Length: 357
Image (cartoon, rainbow, N blue to C red; front, side):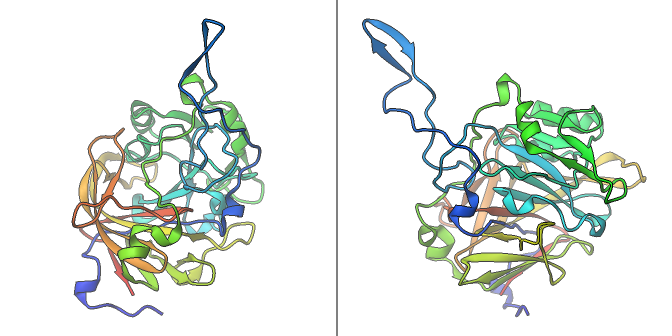
């Protein structure tokens, strides 16, 4: 299906990113709503006294750039499993942003970030890894996982996240009788949001920058034609994306098998981003004795952004765990994405690859 481009038109080894989105802005409208606040500053004067005005609610959802009745709630990041036994997953089709990272044995795992939509259920939920805190530090909010080594959970807390785990008996987690352990932990996101503490209740800060329209996105405006993106994270993880002009989205596949959610919805995105990242070993091993990879998201490197059926080579950087991920073109211009869902592929620079065709 994919034609290999000349080397000058392909990404150097080691970068990949996806953007998955639910089709259409209407599909991304969340339950509930909030009215817009009146214009003005943080306070207003009434009869010579001062009172606090209600917080300003943005006109668009911060993690998608799509308009809607924005509900003031934090980002909810959920560790979702991606081995064969975990598919099809529940809730991925309603995520605003999905990060794909390499874990033990070359398998991949998702960090699915929810804000504009509230699925009934998300899962299978698995454990945290060392890169989760640095990946999510700028967005803030909640990290829900089945558990994890205490050093990794503490790293996530140090990055500013509130960590919710099934191991601690937290409300909202349950085990499905339809799957065997460890692929049977699921989460009710409404329960997770209800557990947000005072420091983690506000809207997320988006590190992604969105154009006013899909046609004004940097890749759609200045990129080269891109019908497909084939990514190699490892021998075990080889996702791909195919552009659908009618749907105005990229469709995701796993080894050429179309990716669908448990509800039968094809996984799609308006933006797909591939980033070349350095991989180190975190030290120690998982329960099976396998070394634990640690994706180095703090740093810089090259990448590619796909939107509107086109691809644009970029450079990425992130100064610290809590600083945003910055995407720029070769001439230093800020990269703007198409409003909608974004999937980000974290591709090992030494052993991974991607091909745009």
